[in-house]
Image (cartoon, rainbow, N blue to C red; front, side, top):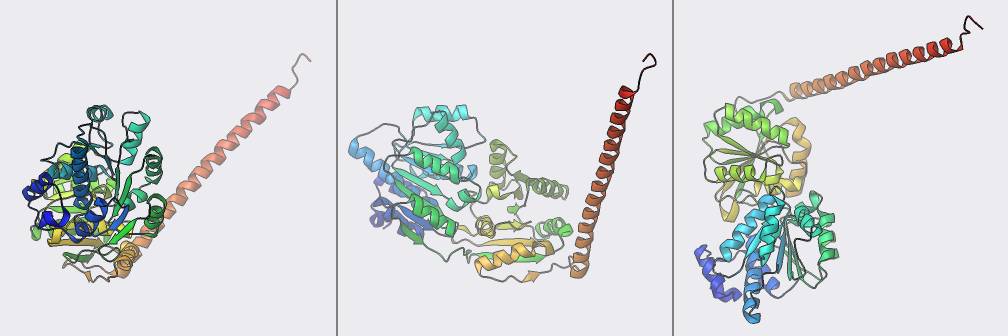
Length: 435
């Protein structure tokens, strides 16, 4: 039934059977026929609904069948898949290898964080499919170590995230290089007006697929908000993990500095923890994710670099230690759990200073959260707000005091300089005894 529906080649069907595919998801059912028909496509669906397979499967099948028709063994890049993060690029390439295991096709991934010379060697060998992050791909284009003149399929995966982190200029530069006619496909977990505007600019009369309500979250993810003071978030997190015996907890921190500090505190509490953020090398990030995926550590503390592309089977818990600045990122974060119709729990630790961000999230997903107060972590809201204001005043007063000290120092220095200049002039103009 799986093969009859899409008309895939036997090698691909064999791979799907090995991967234990039973049926196509809604996004796959709608996207695959349109991609095979050669249409430009703008598609959106919730995270964890099979978006990657929705574009990888038809592209693999078309490249394979075309190679049979043309009896071609040339290793030129026929499909280019752009992603915003290294983790997502590696995840996609892994799936490509799984689906193409019975096909004579090759793939390659190039991202930042890896030696460019090694990538140049891989590109020189020749590949049918290239997965890349825009910044590193631009470097290869400038060095003339990659040829995109034979690309027939271009995919922008997580296009909204690429715009958020400033890849628009790089993407447009890449499009200007690829002057030949090719199919363009945009996939995203959310639709925004910005994305729709961009789609009109770069897609040719695209078909649009919107599987789920805009910016919705999966019903398979249980979402909870714990109301706690900022100063006691770490203690509450350690208690929840310890008392409830949680395993495989993905924790999102707001900054790299906070992630480092949080990981250190969790380790001191006896909880095995690893880190994943932008300051870590790609090797270190891969090792951390691998340890976490295998269950060798209980907690992975990450920044939003891991919000997309992190695909861990049966990940049970996601915790927002800090709420994201962009409400849309909340959807992507909690989408790391509850994947493929499996159950998951997403918890947000919210203090009074987070209320604005929580309000934006509630407005985005159309839901109001109950604030859960964990026993022993009750707080007097008036006292908390007073303390936060006092802290702010202290910072302001400290800043003002430093300003005043610096002003006094500058005034003294200026006065000394003026006095020195006057003395020099007086000495110069004073008549000598012999005049």
